[in-house]
Image (tube, rainbow, N blue to C red; front, side):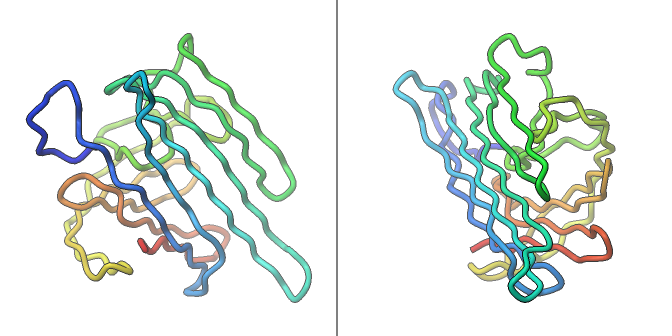
Length: 188
C-alpha cells in the first residue's frame, strides 16, 4: 500500500509518517504513531507506538501500550519484534527471517488489506489471526488536515474495524466499537 508515482521500480516511494489522535466516545484518550525510515541496507523500518489510557479520577481503569518494529525488504516482511501491554498483561514477539508467517500482512494496518484476505499476522501475539476483509463504499474522512476522500475496508475478526486509506494508499483513519465504546482514529 505504498504510494505510487516513482520512476525507479526498485525503490518504491517512502511512506509518510502517520500520527493519529485516538478518541473514545469523542474524547481523546491516546495516540497511535507510525514512523518510517530506510536503513543503510535499503530495508524499510517501520516503528509503531500506541499509548491509550482511560482514567476514572486518579485511577487508571484501562491501559494499552504497544511498541512494534517491522523490517521490510520490498514487499517481504523480514522481521517483526515488539512488546504490548494490555490491561496489565504483557506480550512480546520476536519474529526473524525464518518466521513461518512472513507471508501474512501484520495487523499494524499501515499497509492495508486486500478484500478476501482470510488471515493476518497478529502484532500482539505473533500468531496468525483469522479475519474477513470486505470492501466499503468510498467516503469522505474528516482529519486534522481537512476532509480526505477515502476508500475503506472492514476487517472482521475478534472485533470489526473499519480502516480508511487515501488515493495513494496511505492509512488515514480507523473506527471500531469495543465493550460498548466507540473508538475513532483522527489523522493529525
